[in-house]
Image (cartoon, rainbow, N blue to C red; front, side, top):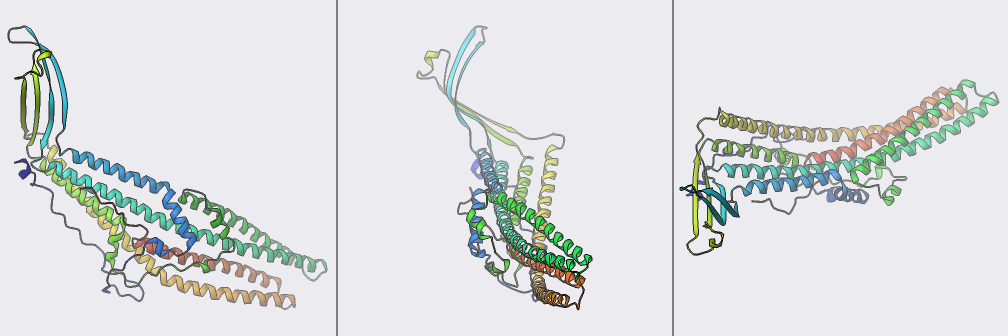
Length: 460
């Protein structure tokens, strides 16, 4: 009877809410309604082709403490699920009892008993315990998705940190070359000033520009150290010596290309994102909690039993005829509890509605992240081309200004302005290249890449 009635469940039928986003991303050159098959998102080992970055990612996945905490949270959630699951089974133990009490004639009598005890086993007729087990299972699965989300963020953060460090090195190289050029310019201007070929104003302007470059170099050196410390924290260890040495002279333009992300992506790729999966598992758990709240309105049936031997003398405990079995079946039907059960049901329904809203918000946030990354991809490419063209023009301008100044055709102010413009443009070229690389990382993360499916199966 218990087995038959336990099939009765008050958990509402779960239906995944419709995604409150368009079917595809509206990007330049791609129509919002484009019908495209879901593309496979490459594993990070296939997406990031730079061997140095792969080495850093492997170190981070092995040593990062946030990822380690996320993995331990899974173990804790698994244990909580096992605790909840165990309540569906009887607790059987071995007990012994010695009692001294007056009998019907007022005489003190000793009673000894020993045997197996079945303590308050709830017969789950209305699937209350089953609903709670279902809730705990999906909370556990949500925790596992949370670990994948942490890993996704870690992969993206390490990649961005590595590209930032490379940009720092390139900026430092530009600043060192600029400082050396300006120091040489100061020397020449001082010589011209000493012989009366240049004014003191020219000399002081050259000195000012040189000190500005020196200050920029110091600032970039500080930022370089801070960025390396941030990357070391993500790795859970210091930057390997061979990787650090390879940074010298590195340029973002030489970074190996990452795997291409196709255009016309359907929005159902968002179901790969661990944070969206986590929100859905939490929604299913909240849905199961409603079943437990509904079952609380029905009687609770518990079985208690003891089987063993009893005797008024300790020596007679195991003699023939002393064995006994005493089962007790009890039921409790809630009649009045000041509306607690109804409030619990309403709370669980509200929790389910909150989980629905959170799930929809997770999808909307993911859709926006992908849309932003796709929208930035084309414009960043145009910006990089324009920035590079400006740098070429500024190099030519600087050479012409220097030649005109040396021949007395232009003022020293024109030369200084050309130097400032060239320095700023060269830095801007590096910054836009960094933005392009980070945009590719962001798009990969937004589409749900960066983690590997675990082979372990969820408990049943």
